[in-house]
Image (cartoon, rainbow, N blue to C red):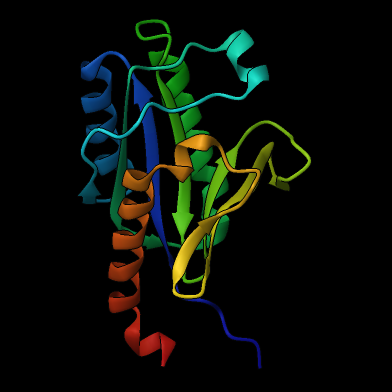
Length: 175
């Protein structure tokens, strides 16, 4: 019999210049998704691909927030749509404002995107999924197509702590 996996840990990466919009998004996300679980310290600056650099400004600040409510993996499409809507409404005041939603599960970390690339998997409604980390030999390893942001020790540490919490919270399911 097929078994549904446990819910995944939702997180968002936020790149910004204007702190005001970061706090607005935090309030919005708590109202829309769930209460916050973890909020990172300031992280290394988010990096853009060469193509994205042509059209997008990079924010000087990056933070990651995770949420208490677990999500079904298919929810990432609707969550991405809501994040893109908030981002579109904020970008006129902070052109660098960018939200990258994703989720963590037992074996990997996935981020969503609205642009196609050879290493992304199309979900539906214009949303793609990209594997960032694989959990092998008792630690996360970033895949070679992951943005450089994910190879930083601070970011890896955040996701390792988040995975530890995830494993603890799902111990009954994983046995």
